Image 1 (cartoon, rainbow, N blue to C red):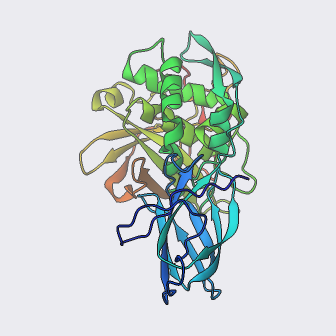
Image 2: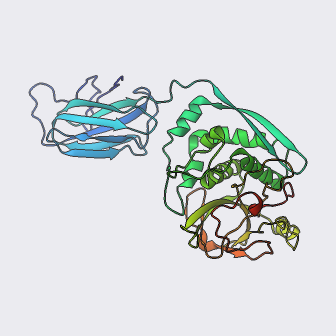
Image 3: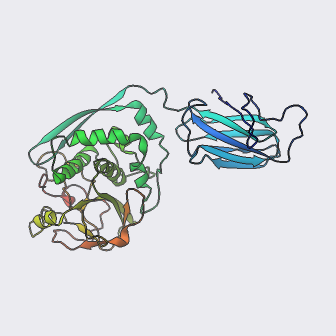
Length: 384
């Protein structure tokens, strides 16, 4: 592994940079009692982009340990006893490096980390099929760059957590896949221009993409991972749906509930999409869009009066008229459940701002199911 220490300058003294391998005082200059190292971490080379959040560990000449992370300016600053220091620098998605170096005066080190995905080239070709509405079946052949898929597997984002899973928002906000997700969202919805057609079509795309699999060990997938694997649990489906709609600038939120009456108690994740009063009025009544066997679930945000429809990704549709696609607003939130709603941008808890609107439905609101699928979540596919 190449170690690229570059310009070493004496901090605070205004001296010219020295091209040296060690931060040591020249000649017979006395060693100070303490020295400070400012370490900049770069990607690829000493002049490459600075890496935020890289971990710098080690110990000084007296064996005093340190553990720092590079700040928003790309550096970590460490003070210790002069002499022979040991360094280890690491960051998810990069090869770890370690070395010993003589540090006898205040100085700057520029260090580079190599991207673990640098050798990944070419594309992974995926084919997606889904029914966007009652009469139209779509097929999309899409290339996913192998480099992006590799980076997504090593993305520095939360991979698990306790209810209500606020960390899911960080998988949507991971910046490296933003352009890719937007291009895909536009391609998925190229036949549609209407707000509700696009929202429903995107929801159907996610429902058809991934057969539900119960997580073993609770691993949260990035949107790109789910698009490649084409399977996942309720969090994975919700993360992908929210990411696609968020890329299209739809007002969306994360929702989750914890149901204590199941044995053992379990939770469920879902999306929320903002809808209009007119849309709700048009789809409310004894024969609302979820009348067959599902629940009509609309929430109101009390701070601004906006209405939000539940978006349930955890279904396994097989065909055009199998009644297993679920539209906006169809889903169940048990009355006994603890419900949490959180913001995509910040992960902030918005739960106190929301209340459930009671609407007619054909199911028990105390359903103990963790993530009802198929006929138990049924809605009229394509009924927008």
